[in-house]
Image (cartoon, rainbow, N blue to C red; front, side, top):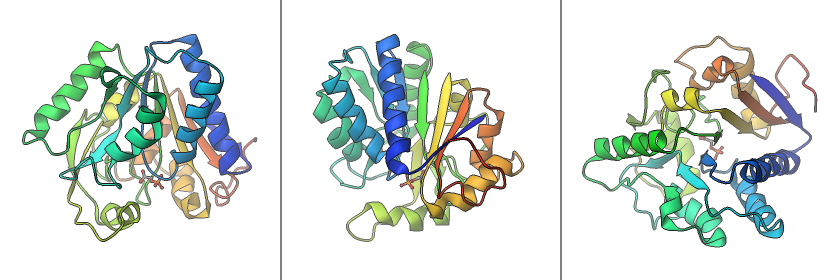
Length: 246
Ligand code: PGA
């Protein structure tokens, strides 16, 4: 695991977007898995700008959505579907064969999980995974207590996830379950980037970097990944005892 520290959110997001652009240039059929949410929002915007301005061929790119709120329709502005359509798929005019998102309205959610697992296998694995971190240390909907070996699965959401998650919605929403790519896939991903910014993430970042590796604090799995990168800004790094190079 390596730690990369940036002055602020803008620099962190710029670095991440440049990294993806170069990865697509080097491997046009890149398999990219991303989380939605506040943290990767600017990375998405910059990525679209840079791909367009740089006249990069992204027609062979495969995009996987990390997770989705179960039973939330894709038209809900707080859904991961809505986020990726607005931020990535529409501006880049990706073909629908290029992206895979969980259908959280499906009757058979287990089969949604199998479908995602199959896509990942058929595409030869995930090249780059970009995730955020929740206030309980979750990654995607891999909540505290989730096995580090699990593949795509349906998760009962933690109380913290349900309450913090309200920020994505216009009004109160009843949240119960999530569907998510699991840690078995994260561990097999060639490069994983966990991004965090702002002082509210300082405590969970300290635990991620310095705490014990335990399924009770999911993000600690990053310590086990030989190509795991923690991208943090000064504020998110502020409680960590070590000082990291910028
Ligand atoms: P955020 O979400 O990027 O909106 O802070 C992080 C997460 O819960 O994974």
